[in-house]
Length: 179
Image 1 (cartoon, rainbow, N blue to C red):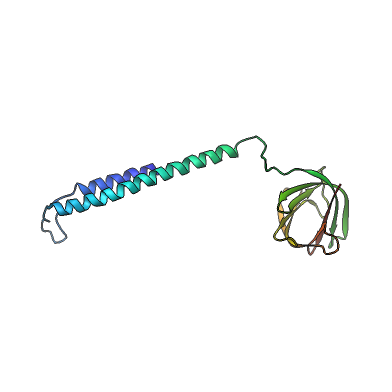
Image 2: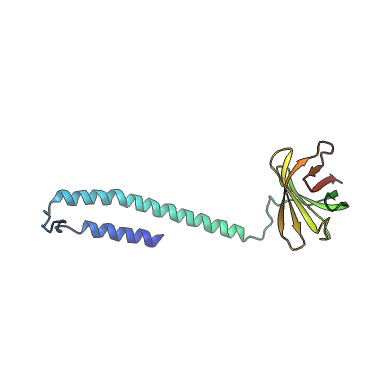
């Protein structure tokens, strides 16, 4: 960015130093002070803009460096999800299978959450974790993570009108109960 500002400065200086040039018809243009004054006015209005642009870019660069440093920090984040042991009941409708047992519940805020088994084994259908991202109080985007770590969007899950701890999609039901 600094190179662009310096290049722009040289271009402006080159324009201000070009007096007495020929016009398009080949005749010498009069070397008068009004043309030079006009160019100087253009330079004076452009220079503060360049300086302000350079200051803004320097501030943005400093902010990016701060973010990069923060991202590399190994200190735990205050917003890190707290893991809680819960009882899960996961049902696969097409596979006609069900898991009932302990799971790890990780809230993400706003009602969104992830559940997985503490031993890393799958719940049903090779799914090792379910992620529910709430869109509203009664609807969430439901995704599943497999043993390879791939995350697949399963579709919209709706909160069960019968059991408020359950989220039901077309093919899966995810119920999480506090211990």
